Length: 239
Image 1 (spheres, rainbow, N blue to C red):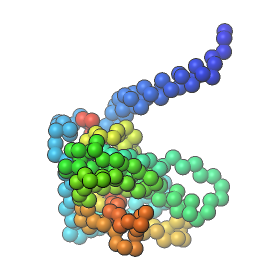
Image 2 (image 1 turned 180 degrees about the vertical axis):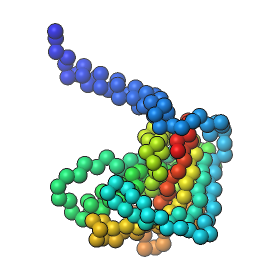
Image 3 (image 1 turned 90 degrees about the vertical axis):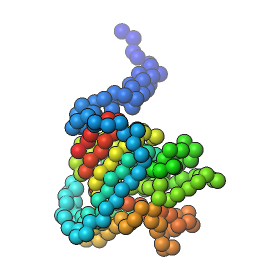
Image 4 (image 1 turned 135 degrees about the vertical axis):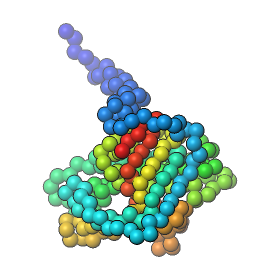
């Protein structure tokens, strides 16, 4: 029997990976993690975000891996939106000593394992005209002379409520429409039980940071910390 060459092994791996990312993974994830079929076609619905402030927020203690944080749900959130980017950060390999900066990142990525960047409204309809990139926790939108409305562009630091919801984000593709339901939250905790960290969400759609938070010398839109309790994607419900 002849040995399989490295070139053939690479080709086989490439074909399997291509099939996995272009149908196989989504099919399996629908069977394993989705709870039901949706009764509507999300692609035919308007691209819109709806927020409802919670009059009396309650602080809850939540466990993420070995870490415990305090979380306050401040705004009920629902959105039909165009997926522009999903960046996932919960694949870190941690062993031995790490500096505080790395421990901070590991802590944050455990609580907030991914970002999802969304377009709504007219920008969501014309998304192909815009240049979009996402670098660690930051969304960049190149629009030139195109219309730009900060209320139709968002970058969301995302906390899935459970593993079914977490897995839904694995299969999302740019340009598809997703339904998200959950809460904007403020949350805080400690790194190694010593160093305080604290994160908060905006109080309105399209809110900008103040002059103390510049990115690339520019004022940026304020990212949300969102706790997601339901996802509908490609006709399947994850909750």
